[in-house]
Length: 441
Image (cartoon, rainbow, N blue to C red):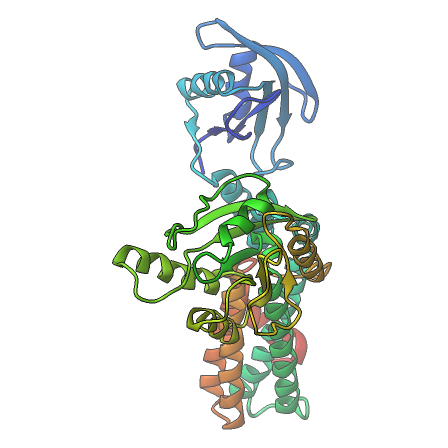
């Protein structure tokens, strides 16, 4: 934390503006050496020429000084806004390193912001997720989380758990004193309420995490039903090779696709069939794996061919899946021979149009839009699941009056919840005990 760090803050590539960020106790003095200035007013944009350590002109641009603690990291920060492109920004970065700064590690600016109490972990993860958000609705949710709604929710729940733990520890440590009546009943009620809150936010977050990560769509079917043709039609260009030869697609092909306000990841998979070579068998295994990873499965069947065991195998995979299934009956421009009735199937000809599939996908994805509070990462979801399990174990122990073991499990739950925002400190229990019970000892 004593080093002054520097890094290019904009994406690599060509653009109109590039930003170099400098943070640390020497940020202001190092910046002044490059702009040959005696002073920079905090939070004012200063137009300046920028020079190398040896006095060679590099560029001209805007320099902004953010004085500690009123900055992103809580330290002195200076940002150089120069002409875009990696050459100029790299030259400025190299000159600052020559003057004593060091290159920042990935995420180090945010880490310093966290250590200096400028943000908690929930906000840090929301910022990162917002940068990589895959939908407009996801971006709106993350913007709210970034401004503290998730932190408020988690801290409120955490405070309730701390209060619950304080109740029971008071029973253990102050058994001879007069305590509020019905304290154990209150504890059970608080446990149940907190368990339900955790269950609710986990369920919502798992159902809608595609808003943030991007929904995945897997196209499956036996060979030659037109999976690759559908992929090409959706993308409006020939991404996959199309052939009448079975087994042409042996490896999964992934591409991004805009569906309404959602940027989705669509996966074309190898045709699923029996009696194939070892190489094709690997592709089929990857196809089955893709169905487990996906949020939506497009199950494709050939309208011009009679139903066979390979079709039935696809139907069995769909039947055993808990994912959203969209049945697609392709090649409907040819005489119909497919005798099964697939409920609500989309009847199309991929070589003519894929609009029915796009409309169905948009309708379903729009049902996943959400404007409430949700968890922004798998790490947060797992922390809440761990907390739920600990609360359930704690409740069972409370029923058996095993209070010491109960406190152990509830401490685990609090630790898991706290990992979403900030570390849990044991002193919070003492504060809760004495503030809520007024024991006067």
